[in-house]
Image (cartoon, rainbow, N blue to C red; front, side, top):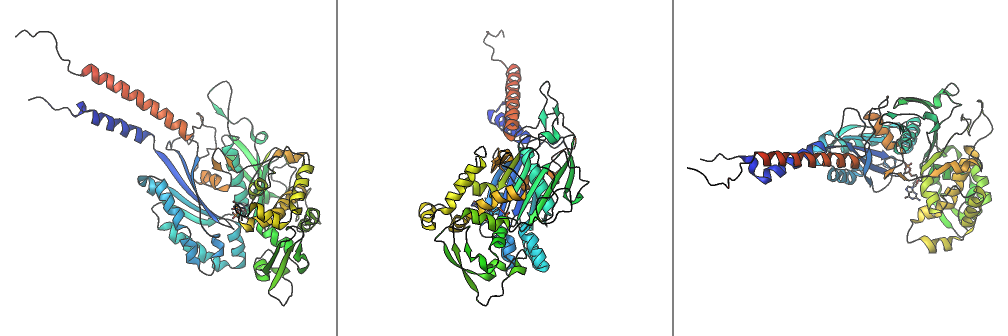
Length: 486
Ligand SMILES: Nc1nc2c(ncn2[C@@H]2O[C@H](COP(=O)(O)OP(=O)(O)O)[C@@H](O)[C@H]2O)c(=O)[nH]1
């Protein structure tokens, strides 16, 4: 009887090859939820499953924006904070192969919204965290914790993200294949992050080693280079809380930062229910006030300047509110609300002279509300639309007056939303840190992107397949065409 050889079946061969490709192209995933003050976002990251030397490049695979407000707004019904995350977590399940779920780390980091809630009502903040944790544990991922990030961590991880995605932490030396970190401070880019409740500034400066104001220093060794980062997070100076600071006081009801013709009845409670402004609540009997727009950029600048305190500084130099800041150095990436606002205003080009930028913003602020509404109301939510004059003026004032950028150094800022398809923000840096994805010493081989990794592995698999077929062919019993001598 003829012996049955399963390898003779082409289907078996193809399945084997696909299996080999599947095994070697395994991808690792990680999920980070950014529980911000205004909303929560879920990010899925992926990288080649090449665990030994952590040289694979991490990329953002998917982003899901949780419907509704930030988790800190669910104090009356904390379970709803947990429920709000379910649809994005379901999306994450669909976007990650099922067999990878149990080994996919899942993190949640909460920022300034929860920092404020903790200040205001610590037990309410605990309840929200409990509810969120319950939901996260109900999914098949590897839950790694839900925690409040310190402002310093938020700033430092944002800096890591920007410099990692921009390939500024490592550089291939021209002569060879060895990966070396050759630049350090010179190539690093500063990070400016504007959220709803806080804002962060982070950069390396040759004039800062952490000895003056050590609370602002974060030190780490990445790819063989030591960094001492200056970072500060200003609680209450995100754009939503800054708007409350600028509005506070009954005299601010005619508001130069809103367009002429803007006329909204608002509740005092809605403005003053934040620890940023609660002590400034006016003693007024009525519950509401009428918020009227004045549309005047110069006056708006003055109002905004008044929310920064420049009177005292116990260090060699300060930004504002008595906070130390070394001299600005190098290029800066400005993201989150910096980008949303300046992109809407069409003012992201920082090679345009600052004077021109201010003139354009001034013209925009002077545009009547009816005209702005008629033009944009179908594309932009009215809440955002009403605030762009304030937000643009706040951004320029914060940069120029607060952080001491000048009309010359303004061009060192680049407004960014994404770098190589990954959003700029603290989440990627946070995950890189917690998964030890950035080695302290320079690796021997350059990081591969996911696409290059898959390409290399596919080419190798095809080569193996061809070799396999050739060997098989040479061993295959040949049909003897010559006449047989019996
Ligand atoms: N114009 C505009 N503003 C946005 C958008 N998304 C968020 N914002 C606002 O930008 C600010 C910062 O948002 P985000 O970075 O998510 O801050 P967080 O919620 O404090 O983490 C908040 O005031 C948001 O309301 C957007 O798509 N367009």
